[in-house]
Length: 156
Image 1: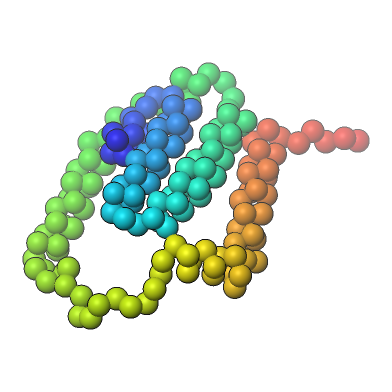
Image 2: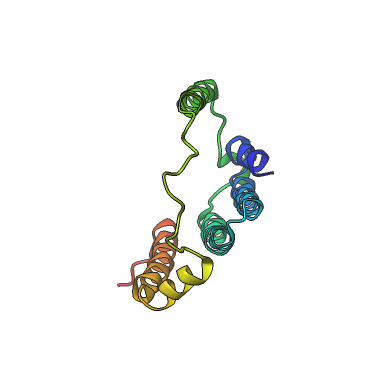
């Protein structure tokens, strides 16, 4: 589902549909995290990317869109070059992984914690100010993007 939705993001002619495919792709990645028993990453993916960033993109696209939606994402005739580069990157990564047979073996067991409870305590105690500052910064960035895209009427 995540790969099919990502393909929809890239190939969709309608920018609103591309944004909605992006939301679906983020959801698919969250499901993959759940399947890998990475509960905290799944929660972060679901709350931050799917819930905040993707919805912000959808609203920004809908608020700043001018003209016909079907003309907002023109045809790109050079998609073959992108596919070739993606294939080459995939081949290089596969060769690196296959050439190192011991890449999965850790020298010692992990004992550093890192559970969802530990991370949430850090976010809500020690790192609360940067966490909230990032939220305010994203909100201000969205408001600024809408103001710049719509234009401000000067009053004299």
